[in-house]
Image 1: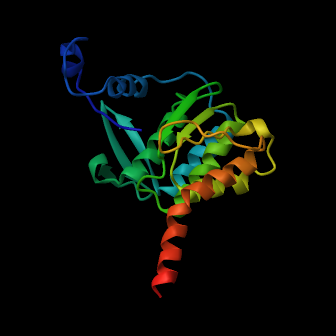
Image 2: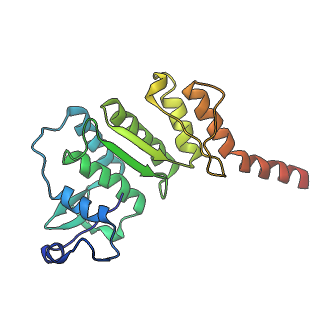
Image 3: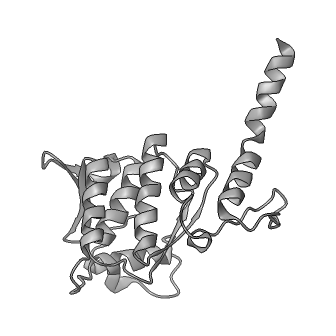
Length: 208
């Protein structure tokens, strides 16, 4: 997830065919953050926003076309001084707070574990699960053993269709799982990703 601030003049001079070097989704995000939903926040979503705020010890605010981070002591910190991991979580919290993500929405995360402490990765899985239970579709690509393990543990008792697992092999082809059980497929996927660590372990044992 990314953040972008643009002045009114910038928006006026933008043309569809201009090669600005700025991806379109930055402008989409800018427009979205300037849109205030009239829908009342769901109680569960409000709790999730509070949980994210607690995790990152603050929240992101979008005012006058600019994005900044306000910590729990009400100190305003420039977004460029905030870690990418905190920004990802904080932007999710801001979009939820503004009711820009709701039931039926699809939210895509490419390697959400990037720059996140393993403990935060587990907390992020908690947030994803709660969002999914509230009808928000989460699609993520990950190489994190911690996140996959967290999914294994925390969705073990959920219905099989609650989580879908797709594992792409090194050649880009989709791997066929032998089992139809989601829990077993998560385990299998994690085992494959951990093979590199196992190889290092055995290599070290031989050298000793």
